[in-house]
Amino acid sequence: MSTAPTLKKLYAEKAFPELMKLRGYTNKHQVPRIVKINLNSGIDAEADKNQIADVQRDLSLIAGQKPVLSKTRKAISNFKLKENQVVGCHVTLRGDSMWEFLYRLLAVALPTIRDFRGVSPKLDGQGNYNLGISDFTIFPEITVENVKKSMGLDITIVTTAETDDEGRDLLRLLGMPFRRTETKTATAA
View (cartoon, rainbow, N blue to C red):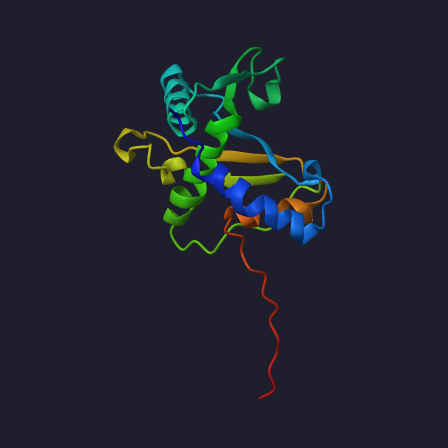
């Protein structure tokens, strides 16, 4: 008997009614929800097969499912790329695995960043949120001893929000630690 993920319960019990009241929605289908989460990591063009396997292994540990390798479509000599060369890997999370990953990101991974002051409150203009992580070892699934080369990670949270304000409210109610934008006022001496 499986139970619903913690963050999914929080969305249903707290965030959903709060958004209905805050935004004045009359229909429950107007309330924004999270559709999917995309994880993407680039791989150096000169990477050997061992490095590609390491990145794929680490991303599968973080996501909980096997990533797909991204390959080039055509050769580009200026970037030293050959046709069908592996240049990255990505995973799309949906359903319960999406909620579990988001919970681990918000509750475990982001607070372990040194001198963390919050993430940028800027969305992409369509209610979706993009987050870049320069060091993926913030996730507890990764053991630092096994890491040969540090990799970055791009996280895209896709929502049904139509505006950035709706998406920001949704993520804030789910616990996204947005950075506060403070206006500095000059005081008279």
